[in-house]
Length: 510
Ligand SMILES: NC(=O)c1ccc[n+]([C@@H]2O[C@H](COP(=O)([O-])OP(=O)(O)OC[C@H]3O[C@@H](n4cnc5c(N)ncnc54)[C@H](OP(=O)(O)O)[C@@H]3O)[C@@H](O)[C@H]2O)c1
Image (cartoon, rainbow, N blue to C red):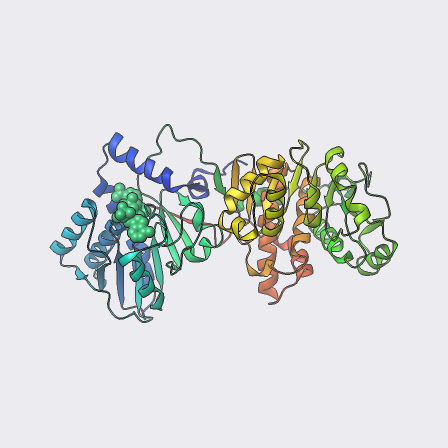
């Protein structure tokens, strides 16, 4: 997947804390750019966001900037000085007694310019006060402790708008892991490149909207291409706006292996999603006659055949979606053979994932939720995984599963992660509306349709998760309490309106 423009490349690429520190070191030490200049540029980007907030909201009267012991605290002190210079009522709260040299220099400047300095935390602030978090950035290690933890507990009690500098304190920049009392920002202004932890669950709920500020940091020449990116709405739009083929036979035929007695709905949802996403034909293969009868009663646009599950099943289909509602033991016994010996592009989902073997080269997209991913990882690796471990290491879990299976892995959950080889993408769309029964079946059918339209497994997975998330948002907006069929029915609108998304970061040049 190629970046669309230089600006989207800046916004879409995600750096680790170590890569950010390398860029700091390279820009300052190897290139001789003074730290105070970088800090001034960084702070100006933050100050402009805070000033815009205050100037556009008459009820906001004051800004409190929490300042920690390192360069993040130095940024905070520079923000306080700049806001003071612009005539905005502001105080810098020193959360810690210790500061590094740069932060100490910034404190001295604050004193020279007459900025109000609080050495103690005041009473928790009301709705008229903006809180800026300059406690910890990319240099944070482990759970917030001591005076920093105390400042975070204090911030939790403040009810006004909150903005974080670079990374909300208490959120791990590389993983999105969130410590107790982490700062919950409405906006985070991050520098040079965004960080994965601001976009994966649960970190993304604490980062709020993200602004990426370019401040003149240089990429060290030895730094390899970062392996993590956000899925770009403009890329999805380019895929979605492809000229549809004139004839339904040319638009791909998705075969769904699923739908057992008692669970026919999952296969129906996958089929409807595939058709809504542009597949010309969708046929469900179930070996249960009762399922066929129920299918025809609910969705006349779907076709149904009764065949035994084996390689070559649904011979007319160009792509398979295997697993939605597939609970029949007889069918499950054939799944490993189907996976190994049927070379067609395929999406594997739900209980079928329990039969996926390691290392098959054919084009496969696997769509586990965290519990299914944990089962697969435990079965295929030496480690023992549960869904909590997966959730705490979403990027790593997806990467490991992709390495073990050789497939493209879609790890579902808010901030869905796509892994292909050692490359990772994070989805910006989606939210609580997707947490409804059958939502995953829609995703499987949607990705199946994109494969049938000729997308590579990686592109189909990335575009599919973005469109699915957006369809969920559209469905929920149209009718709160959206269910899976609503999501499937909104896929067409999502394909039309997918070129922008509010969670795609804003770029500012500092
Ligand atoms: N050149 C620049 O001026 C420039 C450029 C880009 C970005 N930045 C800013 O600088 C930040 C990185 O600065 P930094 O490397 O100094 O790191 P930092 O994020 O400011 O944090 C480092 C400081 O926090 C303490 N700390 C770390 N983990 C802690 C925890 N869990 N609880 C309490 N205290 C903790 C450290 O103390 P110990 O050492 O004792 O652990 C150290 O004093 C970025 O996020 C960005 O905001 C500055």
